[in-house]
Length: 445
Image 1 (tube, rainbow, N blue to C red):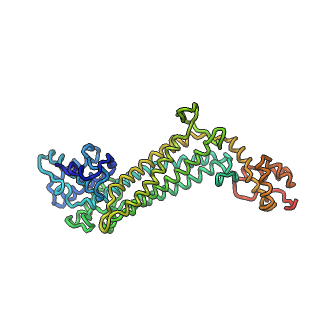
Image 2: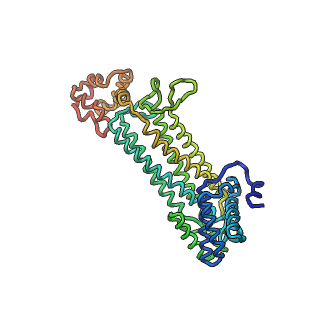
Image 3: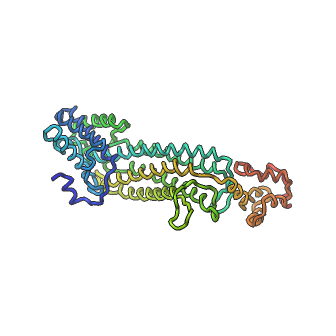
């Protein structure tokens, strides 16, 4: 009976499967190790070549139905390591009609304790590359929209209450700048997980591996992956600690929070059409209700916000997982890679849908935005430098009750030229003190 068949009795049976990125990473480690052991004359050439061939087939998606162990298994990830050892052993043995042992040959110079911590970092890096690419595409669109809508005046809101005017372009640019910071944070986190413990074997000391195994195996692995992996100075560190992966998870959380915030702002601007904000329309050709004909909802935005919430929860789970295990080995390797892979998947899909579906569907209702901006009682703020906070506060109610800003200005004794200047909405969305650009009057008028 194979290891994976025996393991079914002891591991959970949730039906949850490991991401392909992990299977690929482990398989390439097996191929790299076999080449290194062959070079070191520790492994028969024919057996080594067979291991490499089957490992590369596995890394390309073959034999996927033979991955049987559940995600929720032993915390070291021995289950998935042994499952892959068995698959390679079986098919390599058939290939050369010679016994290829899963432990003595496929797992030579390795332990689950260095293979799996190495593989989960490689897999996380590979998936993060896609997130980085999709983040870059979003940035291009956000910048484009910040320019496209830089003259679209709308009301600013704080505490969901009327504030001073802003432009739609300014709002898009704020998110553009934030996602730039997210991209920088992601690049930093990705760089941290490039340090792997391959060669550390059981406890980080490298026992039962050749002195040159680490160097050769990692060189081979770099060639397969074309990424700049390197051995950690302390091989023990990434075996016992998941802190670098928790950093990546936290960056994913940060991106998810920013997606949630942007999604919620879009959702609120789309609220209505007649009884709420209604500053934008969206081209959505999907029924929003099974009972209310014609009702359209921001369905993709809501899907993104749900995905973002899930990413936050997974990050919280990862924090607890990182606490598992004592001394030389963490006990949360299988679940942390499952969670990080799911975070990557949710982020990739959310970023793509936001960039390709949500943002292009937005149709700003420019005249309504401008009308709402001019009706904000907070416009009285522009008179504060002239008449003081207290007197300006007393005028707030007049605009709130529907009086025009121009009429309030006339009552303060301002001439038409000054009124036109200080009520120029384009001036109000830029730095400066509008009232000082016009005619000064006595504050007691």
